[in-house]
Length: 90
Image (cartoon, rainbow, N blue to C red):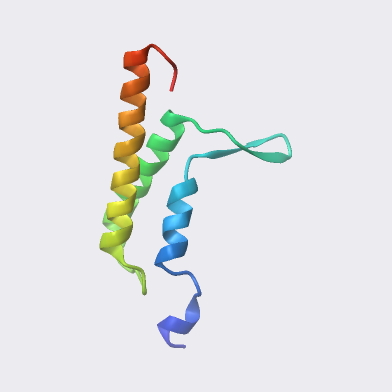
């Protein structure tokens, strides 16, 4: 089977996945949006570590995806730093 017909998952789907990574938790039987900087930062770091070892990207744009994940991580860490300076919790 040709590679392009094996999956409908594309770069946009992967970027949407990254936008939600570490932002949701299961609470009881419900999924809730619980933004947590440490959880999101840890999830993005693990994603980037795994992405660097990934061999097969199929039709996904590796550079765009890794770049997006890196920007998201930088944003989360900057937010965490701003919150710490303001004396709030992240």
